[in-house]
Length: 549
Ligand SMILES: Nc1nc2c(ncn2[C@@H]2O[C@H](COP(=O)(O)OP(=O)(O)OP(=O)(O)O)[C@@H](O)[C@H]2O)c(=O)[nH]1
Ligand SMILES: [K+]
Ligand SMILES: [Mg+2]
Image (tube, rainbow, N blue to C red; front, side):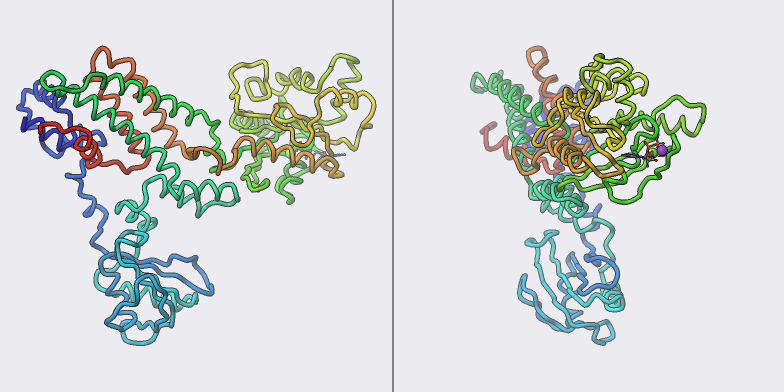
């Protein structure tokens, strides 16, 4: 029993350990080495054997200018680490520290005793600080000389050194103040450029995603503990019947929740990185004119020469609080010019990658096609479908005949140069039958906007429709469960789901191997938050089971 208990203490499965020992021709106890525990522990690292304090240089005290660089009204310099209190004492030349977490106006001195500036000093003793360590802030006047002398004075102190990029947050993570998703949320908040991005980032920073994953981890951990207790003790002790059925039910429930979370149309990722909108079409239909009109600056060259645009021209715009990355592309046509060929290749590549594609048509072309074949085109969408092969856009979101397109992608049709045609007549008839987009609509693909980049007519309608599509795609970042926001999250969630599926298929045949799948799933969840440790499995084991008595 001593061996089994030791396994439990280290969060290892004793059956498995015995099995490994047999195949390696060693005694089981000889495997209790840090390396082995690292390798076989569910999270790869046992708290007992980790040496993070040394790795991250926790014994050093770090400082940095936390406000922006350059002249400003007030600059904030932060210090964290065991010497933070002496930094306050030395700079203020006072033996007594200011009141805890209260701003105190103090004169600050350099190492020679000369006054540096007069500013606010705030003292945050650990663990109730951002990093969890003793920390302090100096709010001084933002002149370059004041800031430089303050940083110099700190650098001259024993045990202090300038912080590396992200080191304050790294310490907060290491001290359990933030988990990885919260760290990512904080970084996203700093980089957020639109309102919806800010809302999503703030939610993640405040731990919404972390709580969701921690809850799943806790439930899965309980399953692991149950299955392993069953493996270890079912023969000689009275483990309640039905333990495995409970696990199976819980794993099934978790799989459903993971599947639902994963099939959210990438809304969180799209909102975080910006919705990719590609402007596509034949040469000279007015794609670059459209880009310039939306971003209200001459970002792309516009000329009457067909084949003007070659490179992809990108412009970031804020559409009603949602971030959009708009790309103008080369006109799609067969050409002998190798430069233009490359441009067309890039344009088609964009069409494949885009979240939303805008197909621009020239109103005069549409009109000519309609009058050439009277009564043939009943809708504009039919006209577009006929021209997909000419444009080389097979397999993209426009190609509704192709079953392989991503159902979450979407497209809209712009009929430009409306100023050149009579809105009545054959074009008018065609558009009337094309289910013209109206306000509040936009959930459908293939919505049509008739407009003129030259006169500005129809521009507002186009912007409204595009905004609606972007909004539908990203959703309201504050509603419902939080969305995951990074490819890293998706990879671990997918791997976790796979592991749970393997468990379900395997538990009848080989419970020891199946249990391993649960641990794999748990490890992947733990990697998203970076938070789960050996202590947690021990807690569950000792709380739920009085094993070994
Ligand atoms: N009358 C009229 N002319 C327009 C309109 N929009 C664009 N044009 C003109 O059409 C020509 C081509 O415009 P661009 O914006 O360069 O067209 P493009 O699709 O980017 O062309 P490429 O880059 O060569 O593929 C220019 O002379 C524009 O001034 C419009 O709404 N009405
Ligand atoms: K052009
Ligand atoms: Mg162009």
